[in-house]
Image (tube, rainbow, N blue to C red; front, side, top):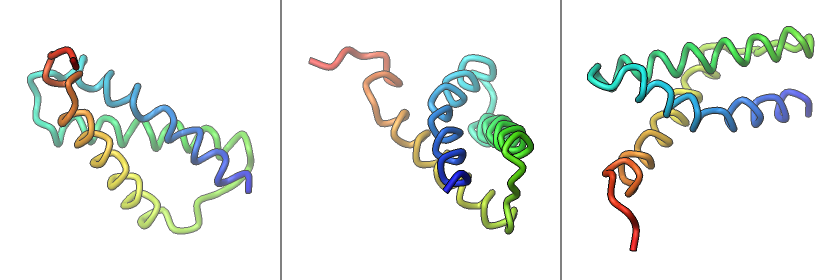
Length: 89
């Protein structure tokens, strides 16, 4: 259960990570921004695992799932009024 809790806590940071990538790498490609967010999320997860002494059993599948979550959040941001710079009325 600690693994799930730790994973959910890391996922809670994704909006901030995506926003930071947009700010830092604005003119770069979406793939470069995504790679940066993936690196930040992996590092955060590794630190949490080291502290909790838990390991991801299948890192490939975990990373694939993490990419899907990041893609989904980026898609939601891109579809929002926040991304378009327009106020919602």
